[in-house]
Length: 385
Ligand SMILES: Cc1ncc(COP(=O)(O)O)c(C=O)c1O
Image (cartoon, rainbow, N blue to C red):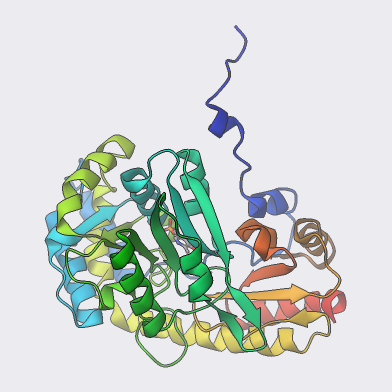
């Protein structure tokens, strides 16, 4: 029997351009992979021990769809403590990753024909999800200049129309390293309140800021409990737990029930023994400080080496763990990154993977040790000087 057609939207999925670049060179001996969004360290030892113990203790069954109560409570306390606000566990939903949290938020709010306004360049999964749901993606480009990336609020607000369901901001941003100011977030929240639309913040890099503070500003700092505000978060980045697949959402309490139903038909729940380990992860402040100090050093190495290369233009990343730089004369970032992998044996991500506005740029994940990073820049230098 011939294979039958799939849903058109699925047939038409483009797929990750980072994967396209990496597929031919992934197994190359000696390649330094700086193309994916993850560090080279593993999770805190206490978290690993807790996961093993949880398995031994029999935490191997389904949990409540919105998450185990103890983890929801631990997240509520963590968020409240970090931000000096009061978030109750009734506003927290545990998700099997930040990625699935985004997916489920879109399933929660997007009807066919609705649009979501995104500030780009941006990690593309949320945009793809909206299109997959027959929604419309509206991209507003962050501005790039000598002093870094910035958000033009007038242009952001001008993109909103009567079919807009939400404004979506990711700060600290992947791939740009841009960090929204408290005033910008206040203005976005105020605008969304007036227009009756959701304000969604992807806060997965909130702990990775390099100005000496503990966290980046978030919409949550200014939101009332029943404001139409959603914060997306994840254990992947700051706790070095990308492969564990655990994240969370903070939403108004009134939507948690519906979110639970959405989780039910997506995955039923997040992995139960991983949820036990999540409670332990939230006690690892010292680890987070260590990671942030390591990444701050790596950021400085990346900035110093790249700004010394003649063909490169970049702003110093304020947050997250990426250098996003333009390369003079480069017209096709996908082909260029393939060439870099072939010739310099370093894996980089093409800017076009983060929306057409990212073309002309390349993303390098600097979350690795200084020796490896230095070796990567030594290899890149002949191509980029
Ligand atoms: C901006 C942003 N949001 C969300 C995620 C999702 O992370 P995870 O699914 O590993 O929790 C990522 C991962 O790269 C990201 O960069």
